[in-house]
Each structure stands twice: as C-alpha cells, then as structure tokens.
Image 1 (cartoon, rainbow, N blue to C red):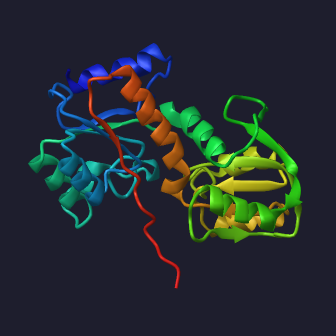
Image 2: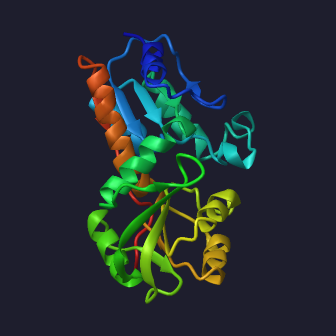
Image 3: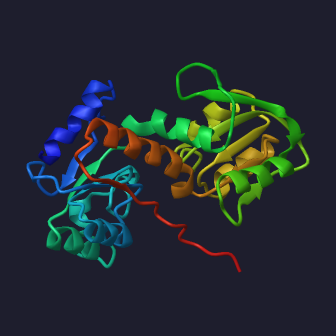
Amino acid sequence: MKANDILSFWQTRNLPLAPHEGFCFGSPEVELAGVLVCWMPTAPAIRAARDLGCNLILAHEHFGFPPKYSGARLDQNLSDRINLPRIRELAERDITVLWAADSLDEVILDGFAQALGLPDPQVCRYSLQRIYHVPALPARQMAVQVMERMAVASLRVCGNLERMVRRVALLPGNSASAHNPEGLRSALAMAPDLLIAGDTDEYPMRAAIDADVPMILVGHARSLAPGLSRFATALRGAFPTLCVECYENPRPWATV
C-alpha cells in the first residue's frame, strides 16, 4: 500500500480535500509502513513517528512557521531555527507528510462535543454552526466540568463566570482566534451563553467580554485531540492491515 492510497478514505466518505490540503513533504508513492495522526508535525511528533515505525504523518496543521494562513511561504523560511530541524528530521527518516485540515472539521467538532459530553446539537445555518442545549448552570461550574472531561489541570477563562449557561457554542482549534474573526462572529450570531474554544488571543477575548459571553479555552491541540483520535480509529477500520497511531501534541505551556 502506498501513501497515495490513503486518499481513498476521503473519497469513499465524501470528504473532499480542500485545494490547500494534500501531500506537503516527501513522496506520495512511498510504500506505507505506518501512519501517525497528529495535530502538527513538530519535532517531538516527528520523533514519535520514527519511534513507532510510521513513515506517513497525517497532520491537521502544516509543519511550517510562520503558518501558511498568515500568508507566509515555506520556501522563504527554510533555513531558520524552526523549520530546518523539522525538515531535516523528516528527510533523514524518509517521512512523508499529508496535510488535512478543513476536510476534517466536522470530525473534529463531533469529537470535541462528544468528549465534553454535550447532547445532540441544534444545527443553525450550516453543519458546523451548532448550539448545544445544556441544563442551566453557572459558567464557572461548566468550566470545572470541561476541565474534568478534557483531563486538563487548568483552563484559561474570560468573562462573567457567574452567568447562567444554557446555550453552548464550540470553536475548536484556533477558530476563535483573531486571524479568523468570522469564527467568533458567527458563533456569537447564534446567541450562545458560553463559548468553549481551543485557543485564542486577547482581541477575541475582549470581544467576547464586550458581548457578555464568557469563554473557556482548553488549548488548541487538546481541543482537536478527541476528533483526531476518532479519525485514527476510523482509518484503522478502513485499512485493518495498516499500523495507525495517534499522537497528541502536548500543551506547550505550564502554569506557575
């Protein structure tokens, strides 16, 4: 089985790859030894693929920095202290990278909601615009539940945590960040009482505070991990003879 053959998974499940997705490093013709599913091919993730005998990394995020959504071109940033070690690791281990982002959005949202224990959603204007109705409770209590469900020792929160919550909107990954303002705006248009997001910065935090909607942040990679794990499980089912591993990029920060 070659790396290219993995694309049949998207085809049979009607998950068309977006124009910017696809193979972004290595050979699509390589004979597959194993697949590592992860959020981003950071140096530790690449080493994990090597140690697990995987020669294809299926990543939700591109390995280059600055990120491609910023408009940066990888070919202009090949010799720096971030990209060069990653590229060397990939090349030395003959690892191919398949980038799949937008095509997995629904899988990731479903996984995030399931991990949080949320009920079936009310779908608003399109499949990714959803409101989850929960029994009324203060946002602070919801934050405690989120921390327990997501198995994290701490969370970032903003806004009025005493507000009663009944309508929850989810913004996994960086869909609540300043570079993606429509993510927050479309979520607020659904009139939620609470936002549960992956990652964001101060601009959207202040916007949410001014809109009087508290926000809970679990971390970018952590919010995607349940969905990526579900995807890896589905991939194993589709290719039962193929070794498929799932690697969760750990939180890059600690609290002091």
